Structures are given as C-alpha cells and as structure tokens.
Length: 417
Image (tube, rainbow, N blue to C red; front, side, top):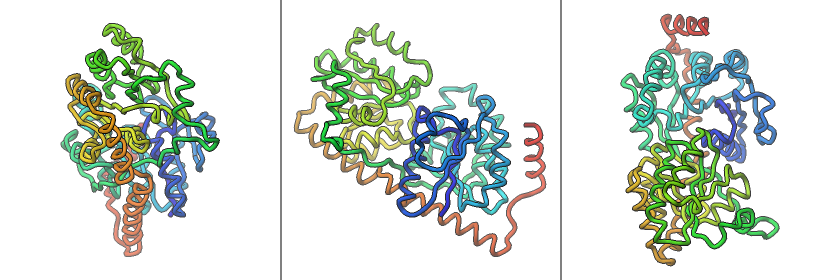
C-alpha cells in the first residue's frame, strides 16, 4: 500500500504524534509498504533534514490555526496517488482541508485524534473549549463523521472522546499503539549508554534517579511531582529528581521557583530536551519513570521507559495505566499530590529484589502491548479494510454521501478563508 501521513509538524518538540508518524513509517516500510508525510512545516525546517522518509513540506502557515493556502490544492492534485490518508491531530487546518479534498474523492481517510477529544481540555481551558464549540459543528464534527475510521489508541480514550461534545458521530476503532524497541544498553563500541549520560551529568552519579521525560507543560503534572518529591525525598537521601524535556509552555521558571520554595532545588536536575544516546542513557541510568499527568492519551515515553526495563509511576489519567499496573510494571494513582506522593513512597519502600522483579515485568509489558510492530500490523489491517471498502463502493457505482447543503457550506468556508 501507499499511505500518506498528514500532520501539522514533524518537530519532535511537539510531542508524541510526530514520533509516532516517524516510527510507524519505518515499521510499515519494513513490511513492504510506502509511507510519505505531508506536513505544514517550512521546507527548510531543521528537523526535516534527517527525516528518513519522503516528506512534502508546504509551509509557511498563518496563525495558531496553521492555515496553509497550499494544502488543499496539493491534496486535490496528489491524493489519488495514495491508497489511504491518515490525519494526525485535530483543531487545525490540516484536518478540515483533508475533509474538503477527500470526502468525495474515493480515497479513504482516517483520523488519529491523539487524545485531543479528551474532556480534560474542556475543564482545564473552558474559554478555549467555547471557541472549539463554535468551530466544531461546521468543521471538526464533519472531519470525524466522514472519516473511514477514527482511530483510538486505548478503550479509555475512545470512551472519553464521547464526553466532550454532544454532537458527535464517528466510526470508532481502537488500534494498538507503540514505539520501536529501545537500543541495547551498550552502544556498538561497547560503551554503556547509562555511563555516557552520567558522564555528561556527573552530579547524578550514585543517585537514585526518578525520571520525568516529556514536554514541560501544565497538563503533565510536573508541579505535582515536585510537591510529592518534596514530601518523600527527606526519607531517601540518595533520591534525585530529573525533569527532562522542552519547556513548551514557558513553565520552567515557575517550577524552579516551586522547587526552591520547597527546599529541594538542589535535588532536581533540568537537562532540557534529551535526544538519541542521551535520552536512552537517561532511561538506563534511572530507577523509575514518573508521569503524574492530568491527561495523557498514550505516552510514548512511558512505552520507551518500559522497553528499557524502567517501571512507571503513572496517574490514572494516563490512558495505558491499567496495562502497566496489571502487568506488574508500575503503580497508578490519582493525579494529585497525595496520589503521586503515595506512589513515590511505595516505590522507595520496595526491596532491591522487588524492584528488580518490577523491572523485568516492565520489559515483558512492553513486548506484549507496546511494540511498533504490533501497532503497524493493527493499523495496516484497519487501513486495508477501509481501502477495500472504498474500492468496492466505487466499483459498484454507489453514490457517495455528498449533498448540496454540505457542498455549499464547504464552498462558503473556502471562500471566507
């Protein structure tokens, strides 16, 4: 098959969707399929230089909606060359343009919301949710309604998606989600990745490292982790917290002030965004991974940690927490200071033998649930079914559900833009 992945940006600082597209493309290519990426990045964006797959970059864009004048014409001209299009993410121009171009084209499109329908956003950002309501009926609702399938990565995500907007209709499918297996603990030259990370951050040597790795954003619960660590760290002198990731929301200074106010500024390290060997070295050098997020669709970093044998301390708002806890690969609790502190306390109370058993279970849970190979097989099955259905509809001469009112609405929106 020839598949087009459509998303606003391949910038790794944007989080999981970009990494998912990269890795799934590699897995599908290994099975003999071709994947190309259509993005609204500027063609000279630095993260596209070593993308490792065919990329069509159509930027620049306008505004936070990322309106791209070149997108709709490109889709209308080139979409017929693909068996299917996968739209990643909501609330920006790329999804609406896909609906305009593909709904009557015979080319099936699929939508990965990537957690963007979670009702947490309604509670956390009520004004933004009101703006989305104004946009929802004439745009995003139609994008989901007319998709061949809307793809959720966990049953929990699918259930929650129904709670955000009462006007909701979609052909829902739950598919596996995962990531590539981590590299070995030792590089090709025999060097330890953990040792290389510690060599770059010598103050961490000999510490019991609790690792957070992800975007530093309010929804991730970094403030909860700092408060909880401040409660429990006095009982474990060797414990040290590492908060690694890009400060996408400009929140880092407030978190540092919080750490200073709680008297633990010297027990937290902020190495910034970690890539390649440094990222894997951080996983290998740490004792446990912590993600007390208020909303997490999947959490690729959780899967990467498990693959490195790193157990997870997860809030119950991380949609895969049940698989992790039931597999004996970590702990789960509410996204509160008390819940997070309880997990830290429980972890520090384990014996070395108990921690070793949990590390072994972490790798087993990764292999069972979260490999990219499993995701590629599941995703391909759904896409092939959708493509076969579309081909059958065209061959039978069945009319496609267009309708004059919808066509006029689309034209009006296009002229307005």
